Image (cartoon, rainbow, N blue to C red; front, side, top):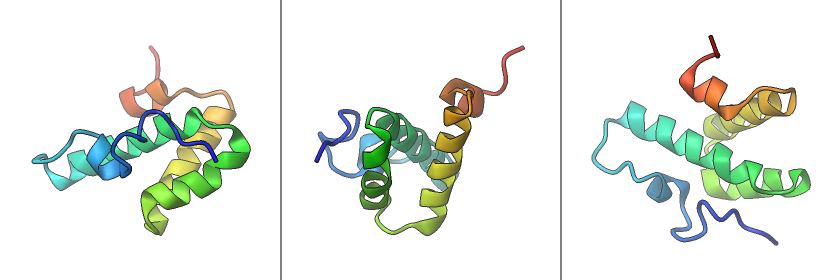
Length: 87
């Protein structure tokens, strides 16, 4: 079972994003980005289990990650999602 290099050092996405002390909205956004980056480093067949473990049962967060990954799989980029569309 592979684990994404982005998150393996700390084990929890909430800790790996380096967002302690930030407002909740900023922490969640940073965690979402970290999760997406980590998931993209894995083969597609390993992503669902890894995402479930890293999101610790947070169904809303799982759904958000899966939606972003779906958009990336359809040709989008994480930069477009997190930084806005290219101009």
